Image (cartoon, rainbow over all chains, first blue to last red; front, side):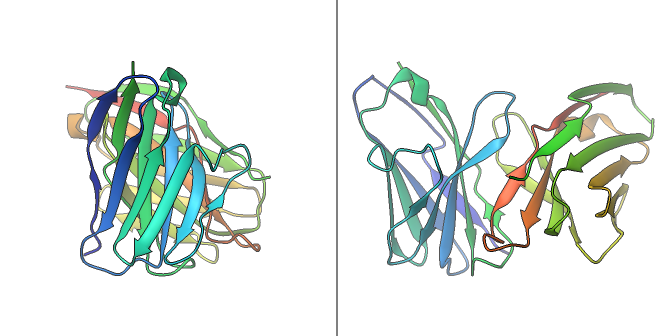
Amino acid sequence: GAVVSQHPSWVICKSGTSVKIECRSLDFQATTMFWYRQFPKQSLMLMATSNEGSKATYEQGVEKDKFLINHASLTLSTLTVTSAHPEDSSFYICSATRGTADTQYFGPGTRLTVL
Amino acid sequence: KQEVTQIPAALSVPEGENLVLNCSFTDSAIYNLQWFRQDPGKGLTSLLLIQSSQREQTSGRLNASLDKSSGRSTLYIAASQPGDSATYLCAVRGSGGSNYKLTFGKGTLLTVNP
């Protein structure tokens, strides 16, 4: 199989704090990972593409200094929401692929609530 | 810019009915199209993937068709069951330079009533 996990599954934090979300490929090496955000009743929107060992590529309108992405190994990528505010509350989903042209395997998502 | 539209936004049917979910996309230059299921508060489960050269794919009670030239896909669910209740998402993958990116529709929320 191709299993992707995320941790935590949900998190509640105070406004102004930073939150780190982990995305792991459990049984394969993921050269590329993707981070999506989903607001209620909306589409999944791609935030950034992360390649192992290099800087992430952010989609237009996504603040790279606010959403820090690190992909230091072939099985782990992290998304850190810095100085989170209530408008950052959303469902964050990652996906992983063996190569950019391969099928994306999705994680279970992380629900972030900023008070 | 690719845009994906799903109709209807919500659908409620009695158990046992056959139903069709629709997906349309604006740019026909796609690599493939994928249907996903999403349960409330959960991640995505891939249901069917249709390559651009294919016309349809089947898995159990699910059948997905693709008409690339007209920018349309349908997901047919036969003999619906309450366990089919979920949001169904359609996503297309481009065939251009950014061919790894998926563009999602907003989904169709399906409720199958016992």
